[in-house]
Amino acid sequence: MRVPLIAGNWKMNTTVVEAIELVNEMRLRLEEVAGVDKVICPPFISLAAVRELIKGSSIKLGAQNLYFEEQGAYTGEISPLMLAELCDFVIIGHSERRQYFGENGGVVSRKVEAALGVKLKPILCIGERLEENEAGKTEEVVAEQLRSSLTGINEPDGLIVAYEPIWAIGTGRAATGEQANETIGFIRQSIARLYSESMAQGTRILYGGSVNAANAAEFISQPEIDGALVGGASLKTNEFLSIVKQAAEIRH
Ligand code: PEP
Image 1: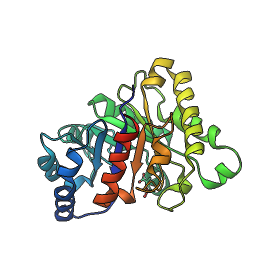
Image 2: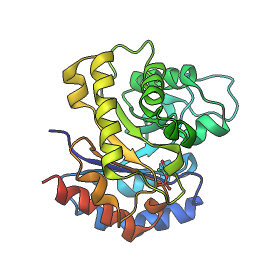
Image 3: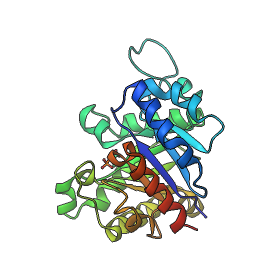
Image 4: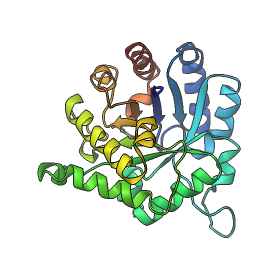
């Protein structure tokens, strides 16, 4: 039985003061919801402050990225060791990082490996572009992204995969539940081919792309979908809380 997981990717939003306000607003209400893993991923600069606010609660903290080296002359970067003190999860290979910062499979796999090395659970993002989707290449693209993002990694313990069709991220144009379920089922088979059936059955695979309180149930109720990676709606307390509650209700 895979415990559902809802992760909020705050992206480059909120100052430290605003992050503290937002966590204070949602903390107690989120804390009350059982049966679902709740992860919030604020910007790096707010991680330490947010960690203090959620200490001892069931809310978990995630980062949005990391650099794969442990330490050294890498100005401006944040290492796995630094994050391991603060977080349990880390988003890796988000399409915005692939698109704007040139991250490819080689970089992403090194980041996944680095995260696993310090027991951070990677939330590995994969997903196809609109033209790839329209050309019927979704499965080919996600299989290749999965393969290249996990190259050289023998046992990705704690790996979480987020299927995020790029055309659905931040556009308000979500996939349908059936479409997402089908592709996520395919991703699960790909994990079985790369590793084993038991690894595939134990891996949580999320859907991401314009999830909100109104459409969350359509995704979470699908048998292959183990939760959601939520962008915009994770910055709104009522929306995020509603998505988390729906995940808890549907999966129980
Ligand atoms: C995301 O940030 O991964 C995401 C899916 O964003 P949104 O929910 O805003 O589409």
